[in-house]
Length: 253
Image (cartoon, rainbow, N blue to C red; front, side, top):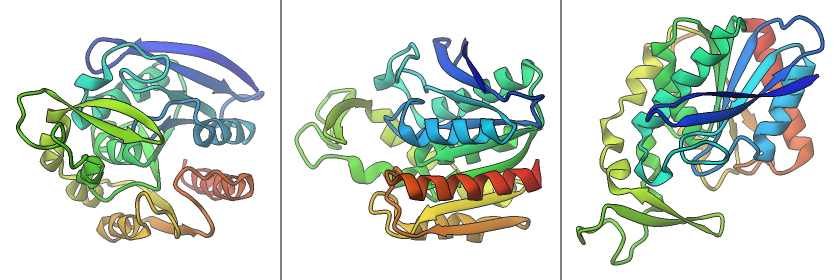
């Protein structure tokens, strides 16, 4: 397996950075990985999936959303709409390099962005969500109950604390969450969808994954991961999830 850097313009015109994993033999298809809110392409959840799927014969692209990881741009100015356009840009960059048919996997809010982006991409044949919310508005629970929280105090950003780190997030990021019809996007997806969700996920409850599954038309699948946290920190659980995802793409790409 070989890896190479890949850059392309994102939703705001800033250059986004990704890593393309090439299988040793001719690729049987391609898969795009979209990471979780405030995470990066280098999170172990993404790297383990990328390596495992490349070993299975797929070309895999993991990338950083605008303003995160190695990508340029200002994270504090982005919204879910920007994330959706970043996913479209990443999938387009992958297909333009001759890798197809294309599958997409989105983790957490990256899963929401993937579901919203998929109807815009005719080259996508199969979709997987991992620990994804049933609506982007689920992230509103991150709003702090402080003077620089959701109230109107004249500032353009909100400080949220995630994983022990503070992030400045645009107020309009939260203001526009209700504008996204993820339920409708799922209902009209028109391609195979697998929902993978940890039963014990305390960040995005398993009921969120159940709602995505209920909204989808066939063909669809739901796989409950036992003893799994939101980031699939346990290696054995991550390996099990990889096998489930790989088998799904083998059957649908």
